[in-house]
Length: 178
Image (cartoon, rainbow, N blue to C red; front, side, top):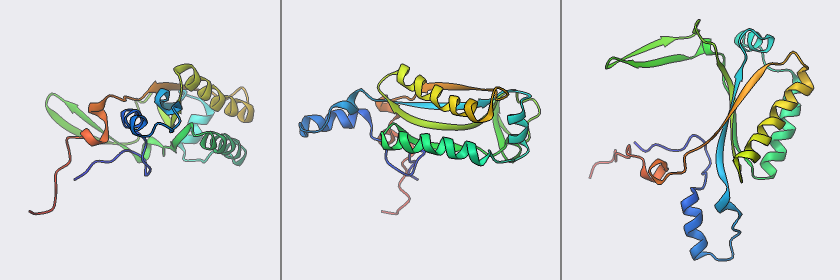
């Protein structure tokens, strides 16, 4: 079994990029300062957007076009590494570890105060730049959906520590016989 990153494409590890600069001196150095961030969009409790989301209604075509244009721009700028919307939590499950035991609960989860509607993984030179990208994304929602739109977004830096990189993953059991 070999665990891979979340996406289908390789996200360069910052240490590998820095090592390659030693052997490839003509390579641009901008990548050594870039950090990866995850933007997590949380739908506000008791909002119309959340009710529509929980009912499985897709976003409007106008919103999808506006978000698509921003995503195209960010992909061209090499700042957007991946995105994903999540299906309503009624279609999901929770796995909980408590008192040494695992339990599984199928959705919906009545006690859920926060519902994560989607995420984006981006590359930015600073936390401030990542926050600005998040503000741009939420502003599109306000522009299209109006003042009734309520959500919040977390912007969190992703770990770049060597022990968290794919090549240091513990679960690399070889399934082939010797």
